[in-house]
Image 1 (tube, one colour):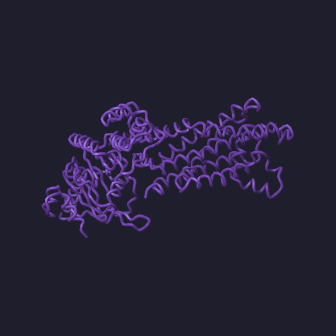
Image 2: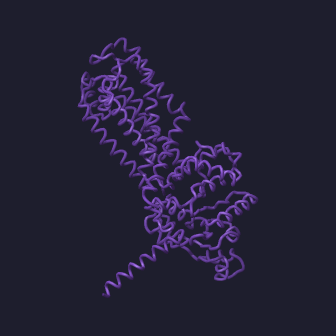
Image 3: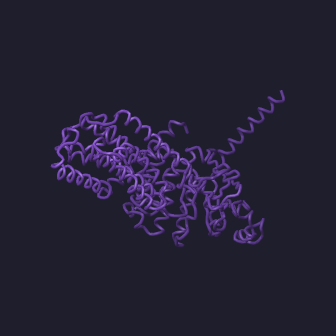
Length: 260
Length: 262
């Protein structure tokens, strides 16, 4: 078989696996899409609506406008992580991952397919939140920066989800990472506040949080306001995304915890 | 001149060896597998399954049958040794995967998909266009008497139906070597004979079949050649008649018991 023929076969296989993942997301929409949308809208209602009337403005922006980009990042990373980790963990624990492992797909194609399903879920959630919030905000200042921030946020956490999906020995391990790493990082990333208005140690803690830079870049994309160098933040995130994706590919390639 | 002649001889041997490998459906060379708990499942195992052969692998539980099949199909990491499928390295060459159809011992089916979707997605993972995979799925559902269950999810199928679906899945992408790991375990007698009929038909169509089983009569009824595996090594290999004549007795069961004696 010539290599181009094999590449076509592998490309079709990758699309099929990504399709299977997307299909799972859509079939289970009450579990995969609805809850994070409701959570984000509750944040918007409470912080943007109820508290927003008292806070008024942060850094010259309406409070709802200020928090929306961070909420979109939060709405992207949580589902992206959860989707890849739970889907892969289920496939492993129930054994049907063997259908994928025996296929001619290369490790990077397997990871890419799982990441694709996760991105569909993450961006569906972000889109739903964005559509609901749009009437209350003033548009997108820098669409490319906004799209890049959400894309990279999804990519980093979907790849991380693949790693956790492979590493987790029980479902609790997945929940442990989600509850003790992803959620705290998200809440301490300056979504609801401006870092430079805080006193130490909170300001330092916020600036040490890598997610802060993604939220800041997303805020620049949506509102034009930023505290850190945007393109440096996006560049570093792109490198982190490549490294995390690479680690996921290496684990699949080695068959770590996938093959005895 | 002598060195040049020697080089030509070496090249010639290499070509012969490559041709030889391609004519062998499954060639396993010095394969070792030691699991994390220290269990040595395969111990420098050597086996060759000729193309077009109905080949049986018999051995007690823990002898290494499933590990061997898993290693060939990419489900088990083998620390050393080599496996070739029609000349393609089973570990490094993705093309080898296209040539293998696997029906594992344990039934693991994607619970998010219906019976038909399972077959279609499997075909697509192996590069079949969607329409072709759909046609093939319908054909195999018909063959395995599962058409009425096409829209049923696997957890709502009986054990026998799930087993048949697993074998159908192994065949979707038109493999040249089908590895069936205890395909009739837990299947009632009538269905077992039905499966035997289908497996014979597949074999007459040119497919190489590697079958592991605990039913000696199954191996006797189906297999042209049989390898007896014990403690990760091949204890004996030949046609059922050859094994009987080598170990004595009147049936393959006698030869098996004799070969397995420590």
